[in-house]
Each structure stands twice: as structure tokens, then as C-alpha cells.
Length: 441
Image 1 (tube, rainbow, N blue to C red):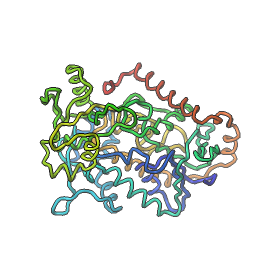
Image 2: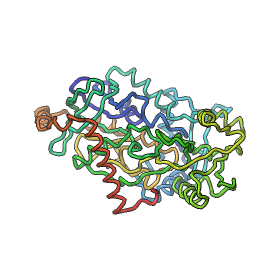
Image 3: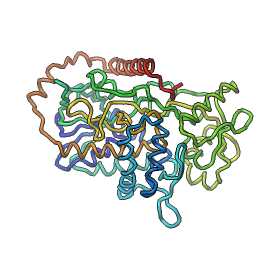
Image 4: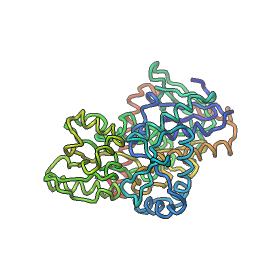
């Protein structure tokens, strides 16, 4: 890894990759990740990506997003996202993303909870993996971009509310060193690693959020945390919870109580369905409820949900002949580092995109399948803004900022990362005390 880049990006999910993809070829770019590039939550996204179904769908899609977010959304952010959705999906198609098609060749769409109509493009039940792999393959072809795996961000290089790069650690050699950058983009995902039960990878512990808290970069709605209604229940609770996609309910699956009676409207927004499940579990004194996929035609289940079928089979369940046990788990982070509609934070030269940021598009509760779209779009806007507003780095100021760093603070990286994790938990608890988020349990 070199010691200077025009743009330094933390995270190889769709936000980090799409940001790199839209930066000009003359810029030298590095994209860092804690582990390997496939260890991002973008890879885990099952359901799909929303696409406005023509201009006449604007009002419906906009209202669905606002309603799901309990109207705490930033309307300007929602408008931009809805109106840009066709462009984003069309770019993915041009990139080679293999979305499901109708017999006539048009893009197939499905429906999920909170949507008033079908508008979600998908690839089987692993849309995130399909999109991320295509983005990663394209970025790897770019001569100006280096993907640096197994590298951990430890801190910002900062002075006078201006970011000059990062202090990072090579995970294999344990070497800690500074990397200067004209612009730093935090695209480091969510915070599932701080929860006992989460659909996220365990390594996602909110490091970007923590360093921003440390350096007084503004954060918003840090306690706005979404619980997904349906993850596969298992007595072995260690590790990541396996998500049962919202699309399953969108295609007709129903929720049943211990007596196999249906007890809620499965297509309400996620927080509403989650609350109904918790209420039913308490009433029945059970650790889970049942999800019945049998109302879906078997051929549709095989074509649309092969990964879910296989995972359930591994756990001893046949989705074609019996119900499967499901339970809510932490899934998504609607709060985060405050960013504007171009990814700019309250610190100069520091940007934040994707799940780690809060631009207001999701409000208090994310509408299903808006996450990939939001991450791709606002990462693209961040890249375009960096290019249009580009200014060189004052290396004298950068070196002065770096010289004030006490590298003794990084002598025990594991201890530091645990302190970061605890700072995030503390901030969530304080925010929850000041303004409780009804979506949490």
C-alpha cells in the first residue's frame, strides 16, 4: 500500500465500489476492507433493488418510502432516490447484472412489505451478491484503483476539522502506518457486530461511526436500528442470523402462531411486522413463530429462493411440506454519520456513504429493498462531487496533523477496536434515552 492517494475509500460493499467506479481515471484510488472483499453486507442482500415503474409510479413509491420511515425521512433525499432508481438499475444491467426477466425479456419485479405495488428487481434470492460481484469485477479492471484487503482503519488523520487520510493497520504484519488522502470516504457498513443476534457479518462493528464520534463529526439518529422480522430460528445462536427474505412474504408466504393460525398482515412495513411477531411470541410463550412458504407455487420457490431452500434443508426443514421457525434479529442501521445529498460530512474532505451514513432517506424505518439503491446512488453522487470540487492536499498541513498523533494509542489494536465498539453502544443507549426509537425492542 502506498502512502498517498487522491481518494481513500473504506469498505468494499456496493457503496465503496460504486464510488470508486465513478471517480475519474486520473485519480489514484485505494479501497480498503477489514477482511476480504466479499465480507460485506452487500453480499448478503437477498431481496432486490427498487426501480420506479415509470413516472406514474413516482408518487406511490415516494409515499411508500415516507410511510415506512414514519415521515421522518428527508423528502429531498427520497425524491432524488426515487427519480434516479431507473438510471441506477439500467447502469447495473449495462454492467452485466443478471436480473430476473419476464418471458418477453423485460425486467421481472416482485413485491415486499411496505410497498403498494411490485417494483423490486432481483436475481434469485441473492441480488446483493450478484450486484457486488459485477461491481467488484469491473473495479478490478481499473488501472487507477487498488483494492487492499485485510487492512483495518484505526483512526482519522485530522486537524482543524479537516481530514488528511487515515491511520491503518496491515492485519497480517500488524504494521500501523499513516496513509494520506485528498479525500477519505467512509463506506464501512453497519453495526450488526455489536449485537448478539444480527444478519450482519460480525466484523461490522461501527468503526467509521466510532472514529467520527471520537473526532466530533456529527452523527444523526444513532439509535435508529431496524429489526428484520424473519430470520431462521436455530438453537445454535452463535454467529450471523440467516435472513429469510422479505420477498418470500411478498410472493405469498404467511406467518403463523404456535397453533398454525395466521396472526398478522405480512406486507406491512418491517417494524410493524416485527412488533406483531414479538407480541405473538409473548402471548404464545415461544421463542419463534412459523413462516409458511407453501402458499407459493413450488416452481416459484425453486426459481426465486434457491439459497433459502438449501439453508432450510441443511437445518432439517422442507419448505415445500412444512413451516419453518423464524425470529426477528437486528438487520439495518438507519442512523449514522451525518451526510448531505452528496455524501459530505461535517468535516472537510471526509465523506460517508452507504449504511454507515445518515442522509435522511430512510427516516425512522427503511422500506424494503431501498438499501442497495440508496448506497449505489449516493456513492455515485459523492464521487461526482469529489471530482467537481477537487482541490489538492496541503501536504505540510497533512504532515503536521500526522505528527501530532500518538502511535502508542494503537499499540493494542484489539483493545482500541473494543473501545470503539463500546463507544458506539454507549452512544446508542444515550440517544435511546433522549429520544426512544419505537422500532427497537
